[in-house]
Length: 194
Image 1 (tube, rainbow, N blue to C red):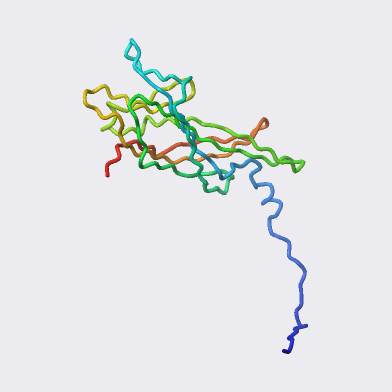
Image 2: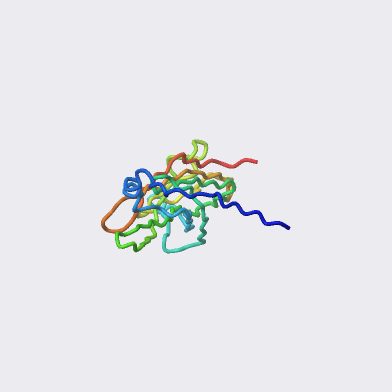
């Protein structure tokens, strides 16, 4: 076997990357990590003597977390959508939804800091008209609870629902700690029918 060697290869001078200083200056110092999650906590709810729907936030029936790999944006943000087509809403079980994300920052000394944040999600504007008599949103502190609260005779104890929304987290430059500004859009809560 004969080895072929080409000695006619010439290397030129490396060219400087155009606008390198501008590129570095415009690179986001704060960014949102792409792994996000939707945390759900379920607590009991009931009507009190004044016919107000009240959530017992001290009691947790169940909690769950869905991890979502978000798409990163050129500005250092993250965006994704959430879709659950088989959410079982049990009568008088209130479910809160929170978006959990991590904001990170590069410091001038080349150190790296991360901080985790939670943002409550208010689904009220997305509750479909055909559910509006039976499905309510109750605010407790900063949290919003979705509650199937039908008092109608013969109403089922559980309904299947589709819950969907899009979210975008834009990084915010801050002297204190890295954080993001959350936008929730295209909210939909409707009855799921096969």
